[in-house]
Image (cartoon, helix red, strand yellow):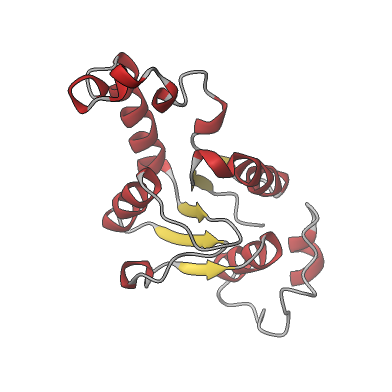
Length: 168
């Protein structure tokens, strides 16, 4: 039976289309996303007027604690944490904090896309695209299977790929 785990996706607001693409691919394979933070109305309190962004006001915003609790709980409940980066290296703010929380909780952490060079990303399993990510999850899921014969280019990302590729 394929790994049907709980996944937390972290990224930046600028990459929401890519987050949705990865989320959809994971859900097609039976994974559950713990928090779809990108779909909430109160998602971006950063978009408020400038006076609300001042540090004296920002952390008093009623949504701030709710967002923290929601995302922290999603990380706590996940089996797998995935940091979604773009095609060029970029800086992350909140997503790096989320990654730190996940690492401290001893979660399996993966990334997709290009991360900036940073030694603190060392324990993160890095993949360049969805096909490689799905293959990496499959290898993680079935450590006793000989999946080294399968390259990510041969890996079928369709929903029933695990049955096709592992032949169990």
